[in-house]
Image 1 (cartoon, helix red, strand yellow):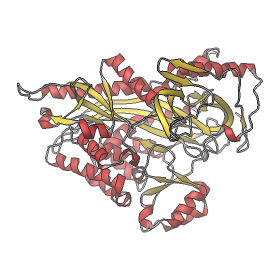
Image 2 (image 1 turned 90 degrees about the vertical axis):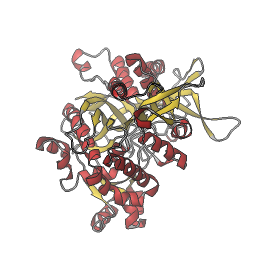
Image 3 (image 1 turned 30 degrees about the vertical axis):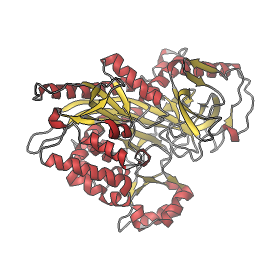
Image 4 (image 1 turned 60 degrees about the vertical axis):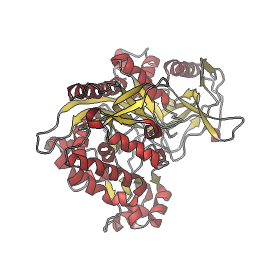
Length: 564
């Protein structure tokens, strides 16, 4: 490992010899000179920008060839994201669906302690169970926990809570349209270390738990294969350090399990001779002009390849304007137009890859679309209860006053999970004055986190201190304070838009959990556990001075772990 001073980095941009343009039919893949969307989970204090660095010419022919090979591999295997380009006729930023550029990636795998990696995987199934247990305790714990936050964040958390109230009332009258829910979860971890370099003593602390739109399962699987290809000349023992990544397969298998549970329910339901039986499909809820379409499309293609199941992409506005309920499932089967020829399809599973941020709901129509889905018989991934479990306030509340214990299946599980908690603090309470004063006095030791996903939302350093000084107590209740984790650093070659930068870096590991479970029905025994898997991982590298961590948001680079 390298021992480095902070901010000691050099740029290796401006390489000639591997800037190229590839065209596949209507799709254009652009390398070098592109404005690249680096993406969605952690974000630097300043996103890496080669334009402000010195740009020496690389003379290392071996490095040139490796970057050329890696870039071509990414193009050939679809490690791509949508490209934002300015039209000559339109000065606004336009996203063309047929124009792609390489997703930002690390040229080498990132060192990660094997003991920490194994622990993150060990935490996967406990979190599958905990998320469901918390969602099931909506009226007694989840709702009271979020009331103050919803009051301060009325237009997003407040509306989600109101929607959950509606569905909960149906449950109380045994009228809930669907009691099975699918979770494709991702728990993200940073290493905490007393040393400045990565070694086996570093241990994982949870950054956040994602319960909606957990992304990059497919591209992360591919980047693992990229690194295995680039390192094919290693010894067998060294190659064993590059762990396999089953994220993509496990995610589509989870979607398929939910699909088959829906069709089983439908076949066992009482139907009339006049009832139309629509073709069941998976609906993926997407954002208009989605930049991360390649990662999503890979799931669509793999789902059909492995299981013969069709997936349709629809926005919340599409659902609001065109979806309706058929007579099946007591008039709660959600059907959507499947094509331009007038046929309809039944939504067996609705998989949200949008709906996690307020900007996904620019009008009441989008909220109407979300409501149509939640009140339907489709199996949701996630439903509104799982969505709420992923809020930062719930993360903080579970870590406070032994609250987690009631949701754990054993003391051993409780101690395992709590050992991965960073220090988390509630805000907006009557007694938050001391921690607010401490954070203002020590701004480099804390992160201020709102109830938002997608990267770029957290506040750090002086911006955090200024916000705390200006907020009212009610406004503070929409946030939590979290310990600033201090991860070890290593040198990495990060590729963005075909341009390499060698920089002191850190990495963040996210572990996917895939779970299909049934809610308890009042007065009955526990609901069924239909699927309970740990489904692969994503590893993102970023510059050591970068605070956030999202690839899609423009802060991080896809990588894979090299276990040490």
